[in-house]
Image (cartoon, helix red, strand yellow):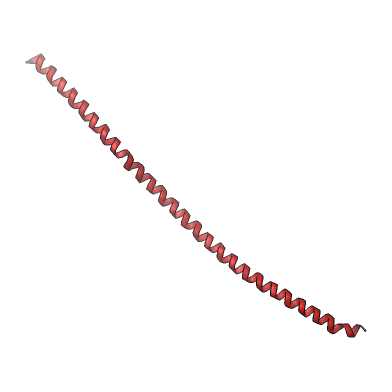
Length: 98
């Protein structure tokens, strides 16, 4: 009786093995997809780092450009005050010695 069950048991085991093999093949495909996604994420992360570095560089340049008009205005005011003081000193000296 035991020998009569061998073909049935063997067939069930073969079906289970085919089912397990199919699942393994599907998992391998999923694993390849996950690996490809991981590599893409690494590339995207590197690009984001590069973009952030570029943005920081641009922010510095923009800050310099924004401060330039203010610096020019300060130079104009300093020049005007210096001119007025020199003119007043020249006028005072001319009245004193003239």
